[in-house]
Amino acid sequence: MLNKEQDIFNALFEGVSEGVLVVNTNQKIVSVNSSVEKMFGYDNGELIDQLLPVLIPKNYHAGHGAHFDGFMKQKEKRKMGVGRDLFGAKKSGEIFPLEVGLNPFKIDETTYIMALIVDVSVRKQQEEQILLLNEQLEKKVKERTKELSTSVKELKVLNIELDKENKKRIEAENKTKDALKKEKELNELKTKFLSLVSHEFKTPLSGILTSAMLLGKYKLTEQQQKRDKHLQTITNKVHYLNNILNDFLSLEILETGKVKYKFYTFRLSKVVNEVVYNANMLLKEGQRIKYPEDIDEISLTQDEKTVELALSNLVNNAIKYSPVNTEIIINIKQGKKFTTITIKDNGIGIPEADQKNIFNRYFRAENALLSEGTGIGLNIIKNHLQNLGGTLTFESEENVGSTFTMKIMNIAK
View (cartoon, rainbow, N blue to C red):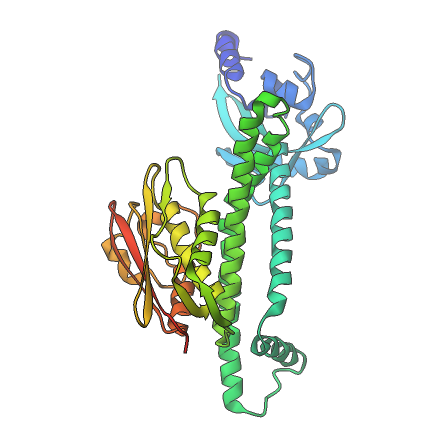
């Protein structure tokens, strides 16, 4: 077929990792590289002069001819099977998924079709595993959201009744309008949450899966350091996913407008110790947290969980957006009416153009788009602090760092 070009063709075929197969207009196989033979389980030269359908599962033979004829009419370079899955048949009869790119060309006025073939079995298995993990996480989210407030439960019941009774009118028109407004906002939250699951969960789940697979390969005692590294990766990714779920649940509770705070007196050092302990597991190489001085005698009569949530969010952000070998500084001062907590970092800072939107829900600063995050943490803690009579402010300069200041009443009213 190729005459003097044969050696060049052979060199090119064997120089690529993908499977390369060439057929003529009669679908007779005229050339393959070793990758195709290995992929389909054939010996060297065994496929030459066989017809292309030998590599196609029998249940696809009926429609193959029409697809081939259609391609020959167009004779354009394209990817095969757009919008549907493709499968190949090995010599053993085993069926496996693949991707195929078709490239027509001529030699001595004779038309040939070159197919570039990629075995995607491993990728398909990984996608199925990720989908399974996503389903499991979504199931956990549904279990956690069963504890929504009474108003949200009534809203769901109302929604079911509206569907069953063809939008039956309720007695109080104002209550109906409020309920429909809350329903719309709740649906928007759920839609945005599903989008977060799709985008924010895939990367950490892939990291967890990869680390879990690699752990099984390190079986020797001297490989403990490598095992510890992957265990730390899994711990960090799980901690990140848990924070996303907690943020979403907290956001829905705030949306109901009926947050139930529990006020009692506690030492602030207890909260700081818990936050710093958990944050130490997230520190990058060389990072350190400077513990506040003289706080042993500081007490608050507030909602402890909310104070811990706010401080933890700010410290974790400082760690995430700061480089290695930097210091995160926590300062605490108590006045007669308010306690002021500042968290200072030397991180990437917030661009001036983005600073006016930094507390908006789902907003991410331009220089933080490639970092993990949902854009709801600051919005949540600012709303909580406002509910408790406090404030959250910041000062920041891009590429210099940020200082967030949390001001909260010593005694809740």
